[in-house]
Image 1 (cartoon, one colour):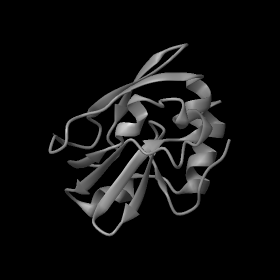
Image 2 (cartoon, one colour):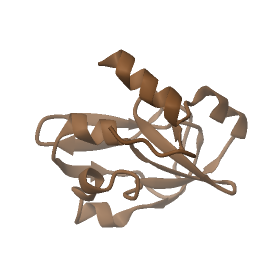
Image 3 (cartoon, helix red, strand yellow):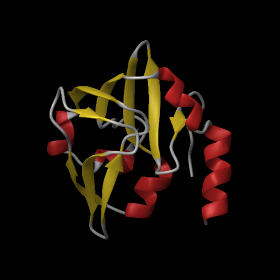
Image 4 (cartoon, one colour):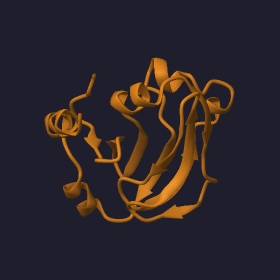
Amino acid sequence: MKTVEGLYYSKDHEWLKIEGDTGIIGISDHAQHSLGDIVYVEVPEEDDHFDAGDSFGTIESVKAASDLLMPVGGTVLEVNESLEDEPGSVNSAPYESWIIKIKFDDVSELEALLDAAGYTAFCEEEA
């Protein structure tokens, strides 16, 4: 399982990268590996607002479908439209194949997330 230093991770297996007041969200290597070959990613509309823990879409693989959950609250600024044609890019490059970009509601929500080491330990406990 690969993790990337400098990202935040949720216990629901989403990652969050901070760029100024923008958050970039995707799913972890652990999540894509557990799902198997991804065949479809449902994304929200721009300007949709979600609270931390809300489902903002669905990711489907040949094995299962899973909700995508917001690691922090925010408003969708942009969706990765390339996932419509290439959902499998989440398998081949999970930390480059982001799903949505958001504007944060409250930066203090980051405190509830894990760093790379904490996420790795969490996944090992879960196994």
